[in-house]
Image (cartoon, rainbow, N blue to C red):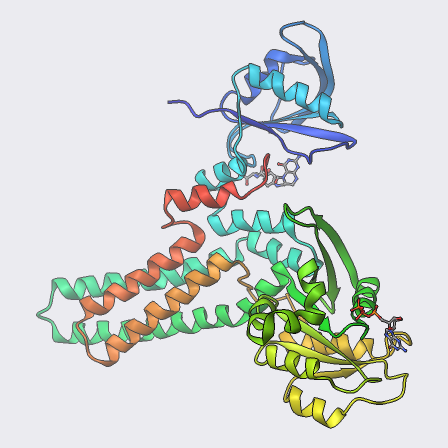
Length: 458
Ligand SMILES: Nc1nc2c(c(=O)[nH]1)N(C=O)[C@@H](CNc1ccc(C(=O)N[C@@H](CCC(=O)O)C(=O)O)cc1)CN2
Ligand SMILES: Nc1nc2c(ncn2[C@@H]2O[C@H](COP(=O)(O)OP(=O)(O)OP(=O)(O)O)[C@@H](O)[C@H]2O)c(=O)[nH]1
């Protein structure tokens, strides 16, 4: 059965200068040629662009004035024939072209289907495809550089090398199982398995060590600003936003509007989530109690707890300290331009080892110190996306954790002197888990699910 030719609008919905209808598949060129008035697209060289008009096959009228790019397999995004019709921006014109293309036998692409074809045809692996999505969603420079490196195949190359090592070990052991009469082979295999497992283990642990940072760079730290009424929470939010504004996204929620402000503090993306829920944290403890407040606040990666220098420590403040015990938080003592009423000794006692920053937001004092404290909470020193391979995707982190466990099992088995064919099960399992990251051992349903999260037209 011939592969379908798929099509979609690959530019964002709404008005723009130009909008692109993309086609991929064996009939991409002939379908377009059927409705294109201009050069015969069947004859043009690959990777060339042509001016012409799209003709409505029913009315024979000109539907759009366009530029058409023709790219022939296999050197294309999907490794199939690809055509891109550049239309005038505006939804009516592009939709009309899309409908005409659909009427000629192309089918509407599913979300992520172009990228999925690139994956199925081996141009990119699964982790690279996921990085394409990350790149689109990147909110800060650092997040983008992590995604670009993953797209480049850096993580893939590392994973492939580890899998190759494991495979060789397993192959070695297989030989041993086939020829059990040679004692020294048994011992050699044992040693090799131990050495290799340890080596791979070390690299998996290293990947996981920076993964927390990778995830932060990719998703941003969900940050809550809490404190009693009037302590300066909004002022703090405004200060951080004005100084570090990255991108504002308004996500119209179904029940209520959530406004997310992304700020980049020394390269650390903070997602300041300003929801009704979090704004209410001022009296959240009163309303729902310490334990439940804690459950709510646990959703945040970072809590900025603001206190008033000009007011005594209240029972409410003490309760808030209880609610955030053990979470990542920074205490901000604000309004230091006013008279001291706050019992600082008590604050230091309650905050224990957590960073405390003194600010006067009206005077713009202490903001630098606060930014430094934020950066230091998650990254020792400056963030360097240079040489490290950051795993940032939750799915990859999950798989690496499982691989780490399987390797621990293997190493324990070796210590206990279990037979090699038993230990080998754990090593093979590690090999499979790592393969899932790049898609070599991923199931069809997982692949479908991952690509369906992509945007339409990508
Ligand atoms: N117009 C347009 N712009 C775009 C894209 C696109 O599909 N169309 N891209 C879509 O994301 C991105 C570019 N990514 C691409 C990645 C690979 C190939 C590609 O054809 N690769 C071939 C060979 C390339 C060559 O060496 O000539 C290959 O790897 O075999 C094309 C685009 C961003 N800009
Ligand atoms: N003197 C002084 N006033 C400040 C400082 N920071 C904020 N304020 C003032 O304190 C008042 C309350 O500040 P907000 O930022 O609205 O405080 P909030 O915690 O968001 O208040 P609620 O929304 O009521 O919970 C405003 O009048 C601010 O101008 C400061 O460092 N010194």
